[in-house]
Image 1 (cartoon, one colour):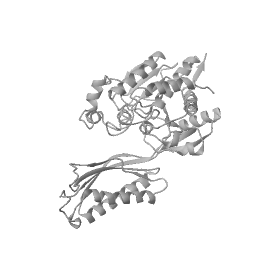
Image 2: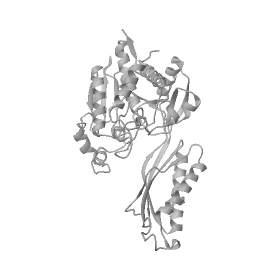
Image 3: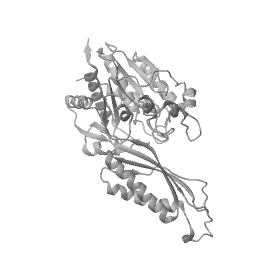
Image 4: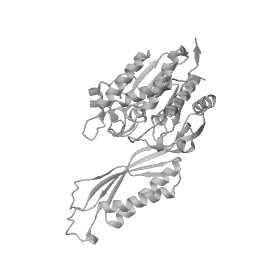
Length: 409
């Protein structure tokens, strides 16, 4: 078994965190922002120093390539460099820089892989600036049309196409190239590994996700002159809806998850009854059939409350990602690597969306999880230990070597 240099990987993570730092020790590099561009440039410089060549495709996905002994399809590692507005120092970035550390370790030990290796930096994984999330990998794998993605705008009306041109990441590399396999290392973003005292999660697949956009309309009226029984208050109606959505999670426990992450009141005023309110609903479950039941039940409950209160409701499905099993051979490569290294582990299902979910429908795919403190992610307090960071990269290195084949000189 081979091992990486943990201190070097940690130093790279901390150097990347200096781009877009936040007040409380996190990172802010929204997709295709100036900070994201700087992060990509730092990573590109490290890759060039490691002897890799760089290319960019039409949606801005960045690829760094180390040639193999053959010109076979590459074994690819990767994740993303963009963050949430107040994100952490490890989400996404760890998978990219762990891939770089794999290449540096191969260089140190004069190991030549049979198949080429690549590191992918996927555009707009977070979905914090442009929706949907995992936009770059969705376009690459054909799950989202390029023209539609390029026309997507952020809240300021700036499009993906404009941002690619502005940052210099509108490339020409073909989309949908053949990959031999894809491996992604990531923090768990949940508490399971930490609670069980385990450094490694062998990810067997991703759970199903459904996003709904909900628009509730009532009647705007004066807060001081409209009797309570006469009101058609959209926000109080939504308050009741939120309660029934929380109980929906109880009905599908423990695997069903329900989240309302955004709520916007149009033309809000302190002394006016809210009449135009929108909110988002995120539903998740390990099983497709159960997720479909959750969506149906949510629609029924919300419509019933709207009718009882004299409100109008419109529910649109924004995005659906089916449950995704990972490739058994790639999962076994990860399991054999962690067992060979002697690290404690457990099998785990990913609760979050990742680029690997799209890639799993394109090529054999697997993921490696490491713990994060208190299960926190999408948070400035997001944290991982240097030891866990090192062990996860050790597993990535050996799984990739098994898949790619290699010779030591």
